[in-house]
Length: 272
Image (spheres, rainbow, N blue to C red):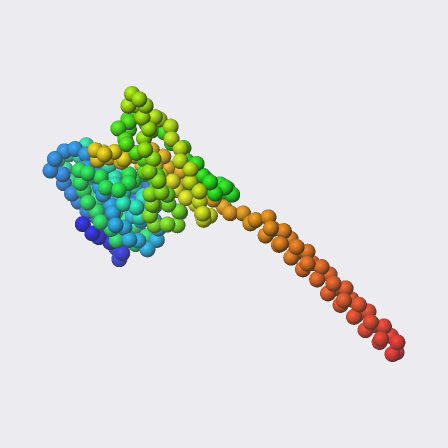
C-alpha cells in the first residue's frame, strides 16, 4: 500500500511513549493492522520514500488492541534516518494474531512511502547507524574499510559496499567485492576496500552480503567517515601575505595621519 504522513496528527490516547523510550518520538503517526494466515517469519518492507527532509520514517510493531496502550507489547522499534528501501524482520509471528504497525515521520519529517508485509525482504536491513557525533574529521580523502564475514554467512557470494553522505536521501552502491574461497571451498574471513573521496563531507559506509539463492541480505559492517579538506599551503601563505600587507597599509595610513596632524598643529602655532 502507499501512504503519507503529511497532514497526520497524533492521537495521544492511543500511544504510550514509555513503551518506546528514545526509539521514537510521535509527531504525525499512522496506524496499520495485519493478521498473518500462517505462523512464521515475516518482513515489513518500506520503500519508495519521498520525504521533505533526509530522515525518513519510523516504525513500531506491537501487539495489543488499538488505542488501549495497557495491552500493547512492543516487538520492534526502528528509526531509519534515511530514505533507503529497508526491511524490518519479525520472527515467530502467530497465525490469527493481529499485529499493529505505527508509522511516523522521523523528527517531524513528512514522507510518502509504500508499506508491505511479505515473506521475502526487499531493500537493506533496517539497522540504526553508529553515532555520527563521535566521528572526528580528518584531512585524508582516502579511506579503507575493513570487515569480516561471519561463519554464519559463509554461503554469501559477494558484498555490496554502499555509501551515503549525511545530507543525502539515499545510499548508492559504490563497489561489489566477491567472497574469496580457499581450495576447499571455505570462505576467507577478512576483507578490505579502499575509497577515494572527491568531495569533503560525512559519509556512512555499509557492507551488505548477497547470495544467488535470494537469502536475506545481512549487514556486516557500517561506519562513518568524515573528510575535511584543509586549505593548501599556498592559500595559507597568500592569506598570511595579505594579512601582513593590510597591517602595513594600516600602519602607513596611521603614520600619515599623525604627520598631517603634526603639520596642522605647527601651522596654527606659527600663525599665532
